[in-house]
Structures are given as structure tokens and as C-alpha cells.
Image 1: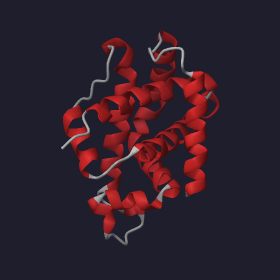
Image 2: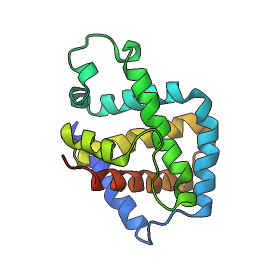
Image 3: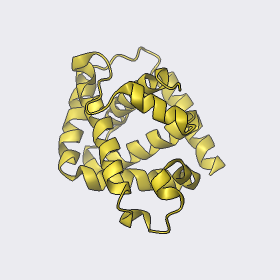
Length: 174
């Protein structure tokens, strides 16, 4: 797992160097995110579950952060609480990305950034967790959109995710 985290961390360093020209979300990035989200939306529950399974494949210890997974012997795909949670997180992440340019900031429906930040703080979420999640998100979207995937689409989703994480981190306090 440490090798994967180091690789992901190195990829982030490379992406940060490539994205240093400002973090504004362009019209082109918005179009790529909207196009891919429209393709994934109808199967958000399945893609959300795949997203979380990828997270746990990369970082199995992350399961301990979820009370409903801690002591469960049920396979992840069959856990009755994981799929709704995974879908909720996946939809929230994608919807926040879709509206980013129009709103000019991260807006989250059905919850507040303050609440999300507090929960992440309470469970001890750290930068490495966000990096694993970003990697899993990008891999899930890549799988979902198939041939539509491109370096530009990856960058668009990366910028949107980074802005969402920055907004969550500003609220990570007790």
C-alpha cells in the first residue's frame, strides 16, 4: 500500500506542476465534466460502489473509517449500507463538479460543507486519504466513460475534485 500511496503522491506532484496556471474551472473543463457525468448519472449507484471498492483495494485500512464496515464480514458489494453511502458521495462529488464554474465555488446539495468537514475531521481523514480517493475517482470515471476519456477530461475532473477537497478542508474542525 505504501508504494501505491507514494506513486499517487508523485502523480499529484506532477499534476500540481502541470496545473500551476491557476485553478479556475474553464468552460471547456465544465463541458467535459458535464458530458461524462451525463453518461454516468443513470448508473450512479453502481459507479459509486465501484469507486468505493477501488478506494478499499488501494487502502484496505480505510474501511476502519466507516462504522458500518468496521466489524462487518459481509463482502463489500453486498453490504447494505455501503452502496447507498457510495452513491451519495459519488453523486455529491460529481454534482459539485458539474456546477463549479456556474456557481464559482463548491456548492453541495443535501448537506453542508461544515457538516462534511466536521465528519472528516472526526474520523481523522488526512491528505493521503483524499489522494487515494482522487485516484479511485479518476479511475472509476475513466472506466465509466471508456473511449471518451482523455488527458483533458482527467485534468477537468482533477481540478474539480481538488477544489471540492479544498472546500472540505477549510471546514475540517471539531
